[in-house]
Length: 243
Image (cartoon, one colour):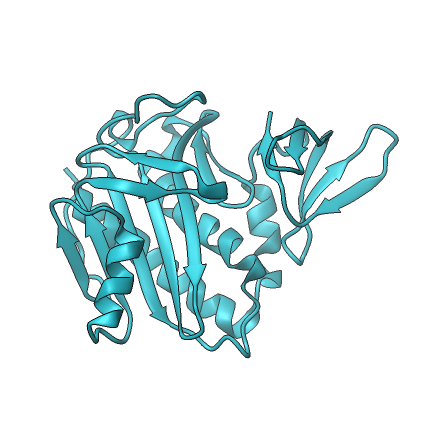
């Protein structure tokens, strides 16, 4: 089993929480400052993008990285993509050549086309909260899309994975704050899900307005690039991607 390594910031670990994002906010209200991580062996009320429920059975990874930020000097539109790349780096290294690990724009991680990780980023005037879920020990039940879990590919302790993800994210975040997304846009595109293949993007919550095309990676601004049937490449700043 892959054991723990030292993390640069404190980790507050719980047996069970409603939401690691919510607990991080509570700790800040109680006076916690600086950067820290909240993690839980079980999360009962996690959320994903578009207000969806994030299922987190016991001994999967539910974690939130929180730290102060300067809203006046940082553009957060590409932070979700930077976060996706940080998680991808960790899972790719752990899974190695046993399966294909890709980033489903903007920050979901899929392994052989099955979802293994999702992210919800929230912020206020002073802090950022990066909520990350990874299926480690089991797949969630009751979801309509393919899922998988890391335990199929490697044996790693839950807190060891939390530490690895936190360290990877902090390194990517530091680089992002200094140089932005442009230096890593190519690396993101090389690891994007279904590059050169047909995908669709839903542009409204009801998923009734959709555009289909060939995935051409992302722009330097982090927009998803689709090559439409006529050859035009169109950039999308928001939307929900599917096959």
